[in-house]
Length: 451
Image (cartoon, rainbow, N blue to C red):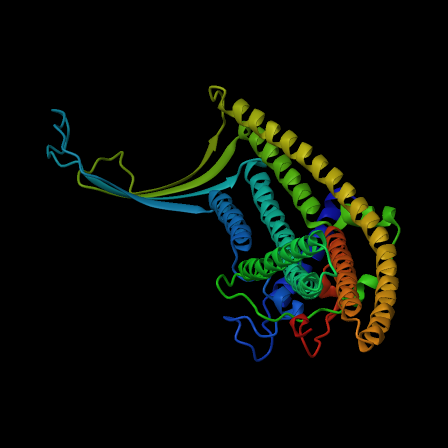
């Protein structure tokens, strides 16, 4: 199969996919006022806002509009052009002129249509159409990047909440130890050094809690900005289940092949290269003749036998010498083609590298998540034992166990969210999105802040 045929088939597939993506991205959650973020906020709802007006999305749409405007400009070159020319002229007639009047004004109507230019317009038209397709592909890429940004911001909020829970419990443990040593110091059972150490640890724990509390506010503001709702940070977020992160990982060679065949950025750059080739063909075709049809209808104040009221004819223009203008346009088009070819090679190399990195990251994170699950089980058992010790009056053990359990939860969440983002990047590179997988998020009855 010819490369152009493959490219056309890719365009058809991507065009259908882009329509589905745009539709799914702009469907608001049922019964929810999208001008405000719902409480609690789910990741599913947040991702539905990816296609809303946002600087990145608006810029990508503007580039599509510019390409469409250029396409209209190229089509107009082969269209019918008409204009009216009026001339108000005073003359001193020749002595032998039959009409001795001085008013030589006229009004003319011109109609012109280019019939054939030996490939110049057709090459320009194909280049303009290909540019439109390329920019539409870049819009899909921008949408994928918006989804990844929203996921990152959403996960940052959830992680900041877990960090605050851990640091809040660490403050309680440090304060209890400091109070206990204060009482022992008064009874002469603790040294000043031990008390000073406990106080320092308590102050450090308070500082970390304050920092994590600030991070909670900051991550929510950044999420609101990512969702195009500045000044409306969400309070409660629903933790997503993310079952898709547990799917089988295909072999890396197949993923790289899929990415080079389906990645929107790669397809867009290939389209731009094809458009550059057509613009080069159009520049070379400027040396070819141009055949046009022209009609003229005129009214004259002074009548002569040689003046025709109606004229129609064919015009053949053959370029002979353009002062180097055509050669300059050919050289410019050639340089643009070489530049885009180099960019395509760069993007293909980058895509291969990003697929490999995401694939390796997923492998590592899948092993790490098994380790984190084991650690949580251990910390859970440790917490149960500490509760038993707490009932015997040893409170410090329970506080320390709660801190370690919260730390294990935080570590597990970091791994899960990193794994989800790695899969999302891999899906974006291979031309798949979470929309194709259907509803993969489950709403829980409570947010992480309820802990």
